Image 1 (tube, one colour):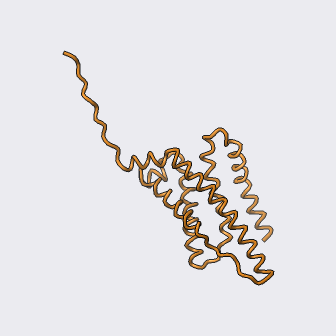
Image 2: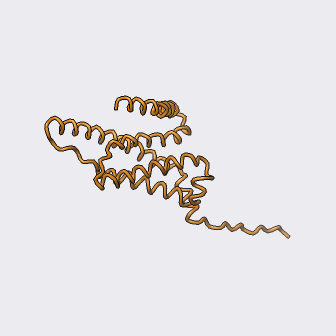
Image 3: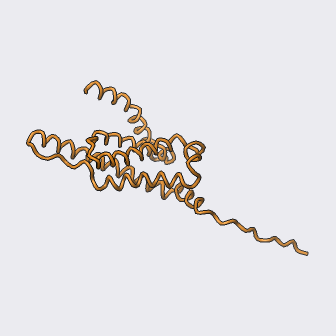
Length: 177
């Protein structure tokens, strides 16, 4: 009698497992990296426009540029949804305490909260446009992805040096003020 093997039935993946595979996949991480870079460029351009606008308003009595740009809604929404998509597959306890790189998860969450709460505050009329500078910390999120790509190691070292110099920059800023 031939030994017949019965087919092994695989239990179907749950939607949470599928979501977990999606958010840990290359496509989602690449999209997040592109959005972070685009947001950094947006912040640089917007900050420059606000500085020029403030300068012209002070000299010529014109109006300052608006503090909220339509792309701010997109970026704040993206960062909030990204965090939610990363939390849902295994829950907040795993995301914040047990997952590999859980320290980065705290950092990512703080950056997303800064984007959302900053947008809400500016919509409420608060004058906190100076806090846009905190957006530079979003670039630090790219560092964790760069260590896996050999070509980007020099850029990663440069960004790490930039982040390391932020403390000195902070103290220099306090001296100037």
